Length: 162
Image 1 (cartoon, rainbow, N blue to C red):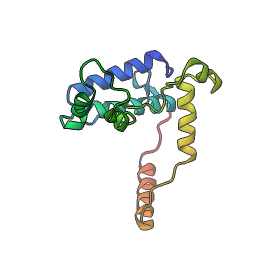
Image 2 (cartoon, helix red, strand yellow):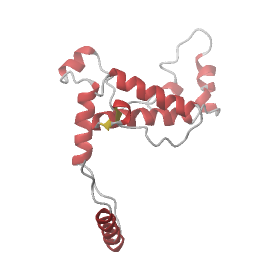
Image 3 (tube, rainbow, N blue to C red):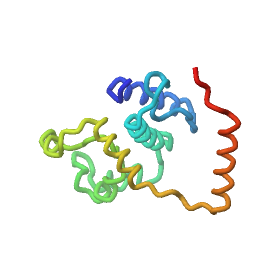
């Protein structure tokens, strides 16, 4: 009913289960509330963020030398730490999925930034996305033909009033 903790964990667990089962195309992965009876823009943004994380998971584990950090293991050796080594410095910004809607700041910084919960942050994000949307280029003749098709189809199926 709301983009709250329950909606988030239900959506995330459903999406994760589908990805772990091998699905690579999930039709109803984003925005669902109340068992799919309605949707919310905030929930859509939150779920799209989770889908991006699931995409990273679905890519699996790379086995190349960089991803296995073998150079770091050789550089640091037993008993050392990896925070300052060249491999960590080269990879730390891209090694993990960074959510666009999660807040990684301290409580103090989060409070100073307005103390937004995830739904409030997602609300701000979808409004920014909509305000900054640019339609992709399309041939004007194709656009006109598509709009004409849509108009004809709508006229052939009038809305039902119950």
